[in-house]
Length: 154
Image 1 (cartoon, rainbow, N blue to C red):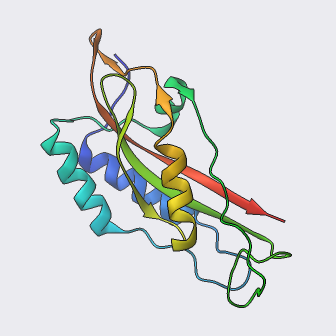
Image 2: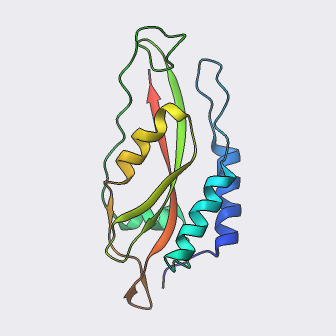
């Protein structure tokens, strides 16, 4: 059996990771904040699906069979109106939580941290990922996990 975490431990771990790993956009914008309401909604959805385990990102990464990288939004022309304007340099992270179902497909993905302008790109990418099913005592089982997606432009 692969290690798993209780919901409370997973939420505590995720919130700690978010606090220590966030990087602001380079143009003086504030770092993204951990969205506790989104995590509460996600936890409720997992419970409705009878998902009782959250697995660490490193365990989920070992099961990843197909990954699609996020595509940055098209750059605008005015840097002061669009943080992704041509010539703008930034590095930031979007954190996505999601369920991996018994067949290894992503379900119920939602962003819990990251700039609003990058959230759709992160979700669109993660929803296309596939995993080997997580097994508990040899039986495929649905699990929850989180990933940090890095966005970088120079």
